[in-house]
Structures are given as structure tokens and as C-alpha cells.
Image: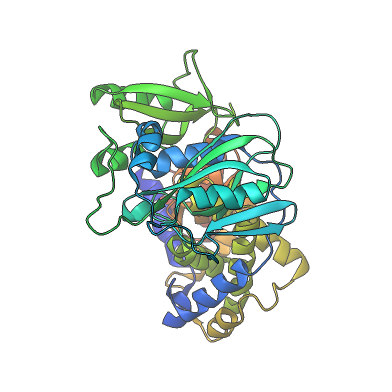
Length: 284
Length: 162
């Protein structure tokens, strides 16, 4: 931007209407904003128009510390999470899941995050679902979130996450449950995060990215590939490119004038970059 | 996302609405669209995505003067009493600005009012960065010309802009 542009912009800024907005309306957590949020959350969400397979997967990668490594640890972690029902099943146990059918989907939320995982499976099986649902101790950022999701087959209806705008982690994970099509016939694994019990520590993925690294990687978004390539190399990292609506891995050389539309650090000192020909899009 | 973007979206709507209470409808409808298309919102560009939606909501409102009834009653009420401060610049600047096509005005507003880069504007406007650069260059040139037509401040005008 040259000096003339700056002076033009200074003039234009003076044209911007300036309002004295009451704090009750201006505060994002104030009564007016809160009322609007609740009104919107009470609106029905129409059926998703064309699920984007990359989205949930990508969000999960961005959401957690080195989720790729975390995913590999999930079976181990599930194995060491002790059961919360040492006394055995009671004759009339409360539900551990809330399952509601809405518009052709079963909306599933966890009511008891420290229940015996077998009880989750049992309640899901009653609905004819082969979903291995588990809950693992996580840091506060991921408590109550879907931190891992894997469906056995790519064909057929897919599992979606229930999102709650206004209740998102700093990394953009707003998931509070899952939506499973009533005709879902495949099998899946879904993992939620929960608060560690007293004396329990949230397992950290080995080699996970530091906060500093995550911040640095986030700043790569919006830049052109050539610039990012040099910046990543200067930090001694390697790049894995992904593109398209299906987030496929790109093996060919990515043009330097493409744009980075998403980025996530991985535990193996690789930075995953989602790239597109134009910024703000996901397909090439 | 809601709380992180609420303030910026409210300001965006206030600066572009004919009446401050109309901004409440724009904010409400924009967030309603976001809620209904939650899976389409890029987590790293939510604010820009919302600006893009708000831009279309504003255009629809100008065409139909409709309201998103009852969703933002409190916000509507609070903004009814919001009072704008008079512009701190000479009339000819506003006059020159208003002679520009709406598309030029919005480009210049996004730069000067929202402080967006060309890359960010491309997200809001749904076009390529190159297209934004070209359109912005032309908008600046037209604004400079309009200023020159209407004022002695030629130093803001064509010099360096052609």
C-alpha cells in the first residue's frame, strides 16, 4: 500500500458511521447477544446439504494436539480408562447416552462421561448401531468434544457432528455430539474428551505441537504456497499437501501461486497444508 | 465463534444499515444462516465467511426491507436508541464516495473500515485475489477522480493511482 492509498483510507475511515452502542448490545456476552444466541440455537437445523467428508476429519486434526498420534493411542488409552461402575450394574440404571431421532438422524450426546464404555455400546446396539463409543481424559480444551471419528466404510451414509455455535474451543471445535443417519449400517469408532478424574492426568500425544508451533502454523493460512514452503523449510519441517473437497493427499508438485486454506502441525514434524487455487476455497 | 465474531459483525452491520436497529436484523439473520450452514463455515475464516453472508443479507434487506422477526428483540430495542456521531470529514468526501458504484464502495469500505487485506476480501466477496486487486485498483482510481472533481485536494487524487 502506498502513501496515497493510506491517505485515501484515512479519509474513508472518517466516513464510517460511529455509533454509541449500549454495552447491553455491544458486549458479545451481554444480554442482547445472549438472547439472540439462544433464539438461534432454538431454531431447527435443516438437514445438511451435502456433507463435506473433509470437514470433520480436518477439524479433528486441527482441534487436538497431534491428533494423528492421538488416534493411534486411542485403543491404548481406552484400555487404561478405568470403569466408573465398579459395583456392577444396578437394576435400574440411568441412561448414559441421550439418543433422539431428528429428521432421519439419531442425535447422540453423552449424559454420563464416566460410564462403563460397555454401557455406551449397549445403548447404541439397542438402536442397531455398531459404533464403538469411548471417552478419554483430555485437556480442558477438548472436554465434551468429539476428538476422533472413524467410519469403517466410505460408502453409504456418514456420521456428522452436532455443532454448538458459541460453545467452541479456541481451535474451532464446536462438536458436542454426533448425528448418525438412521440407515447407518457401517461400523464406526467415536471418541469424546472428558475431564480427567482426580489424580488422573490427560494423556499427551508424544511429540505434539507446542502452542507456539500451533500459533505459527495458523498464521500460514491465507498465504501463497511458495512463501509458506520457504517458511516451513526454514523451520526444518516437511509439508504434506491436501486438496479438494475430499481432502485428498496431493502427490504432484503444488504450484507456488496456490493458497493455503488450512494448516495443522503433526507430531512427526510435518505440517499438513490444505491448498487451493484460490483463497477461501477448498477445491483446486 | 459466535462470541468471537459478534462484535465485528455488529459493527459491520451498523456501518452499512440505514438505521441502527436494522443492523439487529442483519446480525440475527447472518447468524441464523451460519447456524443452518454450520458445516460450511471454515473454522479459520469464520469472521470473513460471516461478512460474506452479511453482505448478501444486507442486499436482500435493501431489496425487500424484511425483518427477522423476534429473533433479536433485545438487540433491536437496544440499537433503536443508538445514535450516530456526525462524520468527522468534509461533505465533499462523502459526496465523492457516494458517486461510486456500490461495488466500489464496498471494496473501499472493507479495506478502510474493516481493515481487510486483498486476500481476506476475496473470501468475503467470493472471488479471486487477483480480481480483488484489479477491482480495488479501479475503485481507488475512481474515488480519487471523484475527489478531484469535487475538491481542491488533488493530492489525494490521481497522483500515483493510474
